Length: 395
Ligand code: ATP
Ligand code: MG
Image (tube, rainbow, N blue to C red; front, side, top):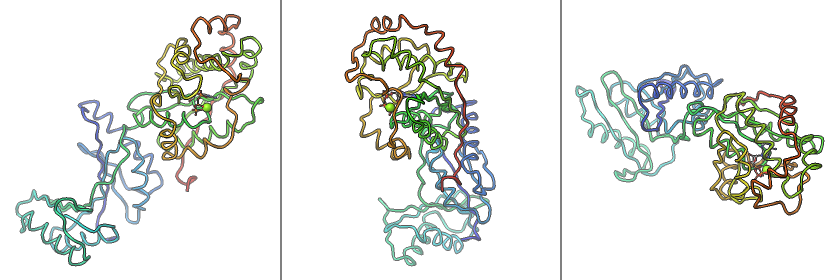
């Protein structure tokens, strides 16, 4: 099929995009598409009204481009379009080439003709091309529920042929919804929470608390690998690594055991919101899901939330564990998340942590701590890493 010109036409779905918003949205999407297609040898990404076109060069790896476009946030659906010469013989040939190798038993050809000087009417074109395909392939026509639809657009300048829509991932282009700071553990839930926020157009910055030397470095390695995987949709990512061991040591010696996890989480939240302010993130994101563990009961979420002065978003709050696991498998984080590691929150934790802590309990437990100083000392020890995803590393 090398003699036909081909290109991808990309559509997005969000309704209500108007004026300046639409331009902002389209520019972000076009930019993200370029980033995702780096190294594929595409020719150009062009913004048109209502759609984005990816022009190809001779010999570009079309299957690779299709694979990557399927994963770009904000694409609702897209098509691979073939340009055909304006005569029925050429249209029939290209339609046959295009469908060769596709799996279908029944098909329907649909023609739109805006050039009324073309010698055949739309139904005639559909009948000619459909008849040709059926005769050559032995497949059947089905006007109602065909396995495959072939579209032919005849305009003044060109004829375009394409088959059914390729499904995009949906969502919004990363960056259109602002920035969030994701509290990323090495576990299953928080990477899924991050992915969902990225899909809604939020640029994710990451923060991880680690307890080395009380735990080994496995959690750090896992978190770096999870960040790399999440950098495919999120693009270039920043992660802040917070040494948490000294703070935990102080909590363990100075406070009652039943509240430890909650005290850890409050200290984490205090530090995270300082980092959020530094990077202009407008919310924190966690992987919490209602009642999944003792620290995630409503009263306990409340005592964590009480010390926060920016929103804490919990995209998984109403999800069952099984659904979260399925999602983690789908986005490619599950394997890494289930490698063995010790989370800092499981360190020095009693068998029966409080499930119904009150604000008064927590304030009392913290009364002896110089919180401002502890936060300040820890802030000074945070390290920052940049993580990128590359399809070359991944293949
Ligand atoms: P996950 O599977 O994401 O680890 P979890 O079910 O183990 O979650 P918790 O350990 O209670 O639940 O943690 C709840 C949330 O707190 C996590 O989803 C994550 O957002 C955040 N969190 C926990 N541990 C850390 C950590 N070490 N660094 C950063 N954030 C953390
Ligand atoms: Mg965890």
